[in-house]
Amino acid sequence: MEHNTTENTVANPNDVTLDKVSTSRFIFYVQLFCILAFMLGGCYNLYKHHYPGKPDVAVPESTLYNPKYK
Image (cartoon, rainbow, N blue to C red; front, side, top):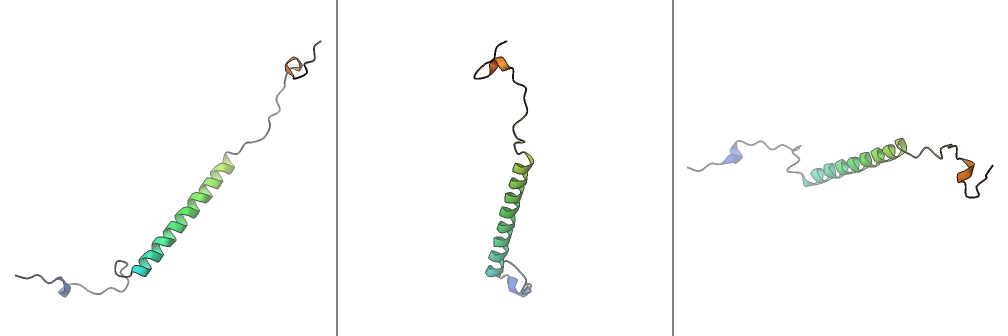
């Protein structure tokens, strides 16, 4: 008994498994979106955790490079 599967299938022009150009274009745009999302996320994370600047710390005068003694 021979099974023929082509009798039960319907040709779907929107099927991505049949259209290689459409599939590769879709994968390209997904990769582009992922790379862009990771870059923007990384830049935002670097901005969020950036160095706030030189803190204003009180340094005793006896510990300076040229110490001042009383």
